[in-house]
Image (cartoon, rainbow, N blue to C red; front, side, top):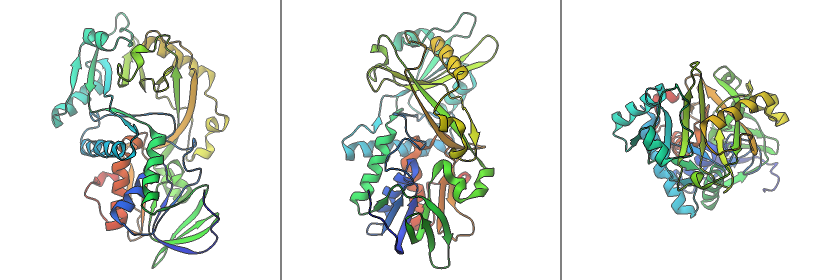
Length: 393
């Protein structure tokens, strides 16, 4: 995409990693610091399949069971997603709603209702009969188990992640930012007057740097390996014989938990059909853990173990009616998980605010991406962000 750079050049702001959070930070820097020299550096192609964000869709919910600090953030993110739709003319955010299905006394259902009540969030509760009438694709609870209920979150929806990253980058480029793709950053070295960024196509310096290299955070900051575990996330798509009930007008994004008679829990999540023939039904099981994606064997082979697929298929048949039980499409992804699932989003100690790191999104980065990008940009431009919770340090 860009010509080779082997000279020394200076920028006001450099963003390392231009995926989920970095693309948004790049865009928000151009909004907060118009006229500044801004450079994004991306290890792979501008949009690619190797990061955490690929895979057609991501779930977005406002009624988050985590509650607390996350509700104002996700509400702000929704406003920004709708603004991206308006500006791009594309359905980056799909406002189809969200539904959580499970026994009414299941912990996540109880937590979600508590958050809804605390924040006065718009919602609807369906009993088992209401669920069967509204969303008939969900299989009935098995005999002997607690009847299902459903919590409908009308402010929820889906995000098209590849579009989100591409358009955030595009907004930044249109505002004058530069983007180097297929460029690997080798080191970030803060100095007295500026920070040196060494790459495989030369060196640049910057007044402020945002490091948003996702699952590769420990490459530049090895100490983060003690705080962030990189895990593989398999996504699977299945084929309904009748697609009608799975169309976006008939099914929101969803999460469902089945509590089996032995006490074990079968969990799934997914989105309505976006390709018109298959539906994303994924099961949230991780297959492999390391301190960097490069050490995850399953990502190298591209194969989910057969015994894992058999479990997925057994669950899918129990969760949904009319769906063939073998996946027709599989993709493998990864993300960095912190122990408390709160992101690491703050200044790197000892850099005087010159370097901000945004990583450890714990599978939740895309829903918050615009607002997290805004926080990172505010930290870089002004040194502080009124949006940023202290727990993100």
